[in-house]
Amino acid sequence: MKQKVSCFKAIDKRIITEGENLAFSLYMANADKNGMTLLLESGNTIDGDMKVTLRSVDKLYTEEREYPAYKAYLNHHIQYIASRKDIPTEEKAAIVYEKATEVMDTMFQDPEALGNIQEIQPLVGGFIEIVLHDSGAVESLMQITAHDYYTHTHSINVSIYTISLGAFLGIRGEELSTLGTAAVLHDIGKSKVDYNIINKNGRLDDMEFEEMKRHPAEGHQIALNLGITDERILTGIRHHHERLHGGGYPDNLKGVKISRFARIIGVCDVFDALSTKRSYKDPMTSFESLRLMKQEFKEHLDMSIVDAFIKMLLKREQTK
Image (tube, rainbow, N blue to C red; front, side, top):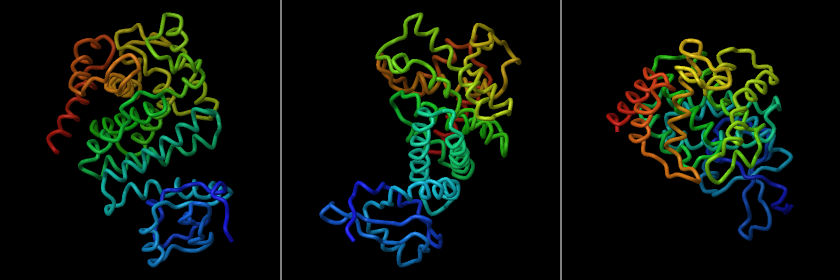
């Protein structure tokens, strides 16, 4: 039976794994683009023949009513995909980044929905899997980071830099996962700031900047509302704009009172802000960004972490 295309949603065929029993059906568009052909009904297993068939299909679809089952499948398999040796690092990085963009778009629309926060952890795990097990991971991840500054993609970029830097600093296991979670959530408080300020085409005036400065405390409160109790995540969100020598916000902390997570995230946050395009400025190169950070942010950032970030990038250049 021919079914209308509007009843379907596109899915990523790259994640469909041979031997898996699917809780959602697979369709391809008919040549006339006016209907769909059923390839595999839900409840069936992907065998070798079906995997060969899927290679010749440009785009896969599932029924809109079964899309939640597809999302659950994706969340469950994203870390496995990131660990696969048969998929090039660049492709794995792109798959995880695309999924992360979708999740962050949804999260910023409804930041206090518990289901959204539950989708964060598989993505963090996917990035960690790539960083720890692929020698060219940092290079591949930096190539796919968005080069225009948007709050949602900025959060993903910062999490990528943070996970990479954390791993370079020797952080592993549960602590690295927790650090990545704090990084991806570090700007969630911007969902509570006036949309026109967030997306202003130009620099903020003093009143607008005061409004913007609310976002770390707002993010901290959102995290508490979501049931997050880990102080490493909470301080990473709340204190990533504190300054090492004081004068930051929202709590005007200094030195060791600023948690290590917040200091790591703060460095990665500044680097991404400088190296991405804004409406009022062109992006700096990595070299220009780091030079400015070394020269102008001595009172702001932990220079030992900035130096580690530089060493990490130099190592990346040496492994090209």
